[in-house]
Image (cartoon, rainbow, N blue to C red; front, side, top):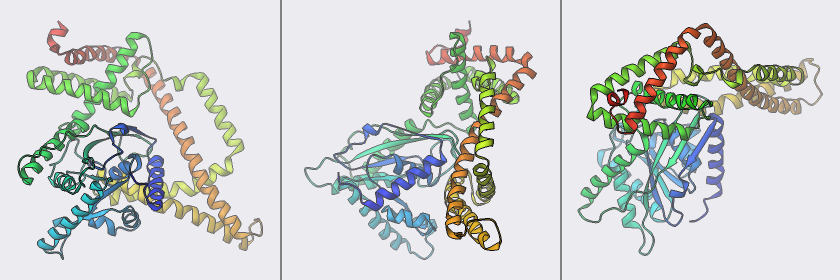
Length: 472
């Protein structure tokens, strides 16, 4: 496979830096499933606007050429980056006021032909078969465009060259629009070879069904967000209860363990909901009551057994000493970081709440808005420092050097404030947990008993044993 052009490699590094700054941890699984001797098509669900393709671009082991609605290519900042990455425009009917249906179909045929050429020549493309980004915890209608593109690429693949593959991609967000959370990108094994029988339309329909089934397996969709959150609560209570019975603390979570645990819980829930819906409805009510109790107290499942380790006296003393050292050694840098970076941070939150039509757009607005607002704030701080040289401030007689230094220190101070704020938030949560345990200690025993009961009932589901029988 040919080495991507220099501009592509530079922009991919830029995108990687952006997503790794926004998300605390980006985990990647299954890169070994992406072959290096042929091209292929990545298919994924689309819950998070432009962040979804950015993550695939940042984590794919090979070059990716995207198809995207043509309106995105006209956006400031975003459009030039997408064009430089080789993005091919897709023309949606609802976006084309001045284009006739025939012209739109011709333009889309040309675009799909260009993407198919890329796949047939050994590159990878990526499409989101739902055709629209959304906030639902399940797939929207999967359309046939991805299947038609892949079948065209198969036809255009030169004789003797390995045929391209379809690779489902799972995108799992801890909290998709929240700064400094975790995300998992999971490349699944390629779909089996496409059957050659039937006409093109029948092949496309059959492949679309297989893509939809593969994405259901990759996404673990639920009917609504309330049920989705309850399944995660079941996952965490099982881990906390099992650790308590062993006399241990629960192992630190990763986004990978979150996804695997959710998949196991959800599979058992679905099977038994079909077989014994009344039992499952009772289990869901009991789980909801337990979840409400924890949320009211502001505790996690593991907090029922002991306070978090980060809140132990020795760690608190260490944190205070560290804070004192920071206050003595770095006050100018941290003060500058707060003064320069906090206003654009809050401005960006306001812009995101106004400009985002729905949650799926929030992270996109925050990231691309931040690419403008924060550098602008650093530049203005540097400009103010440079101009301050000429108005009597006690600064060296090198105004532009002073300006560049202040701009650089504003950026560095912002990074320092970011990391120290994460430490402070963790310490505050630990203190709050200790206070909640002290104030509501009389309720902890009841919640522990609920957790133990729910743990046993969910394990009975996983083992294929009816919950009523397990309780007996």
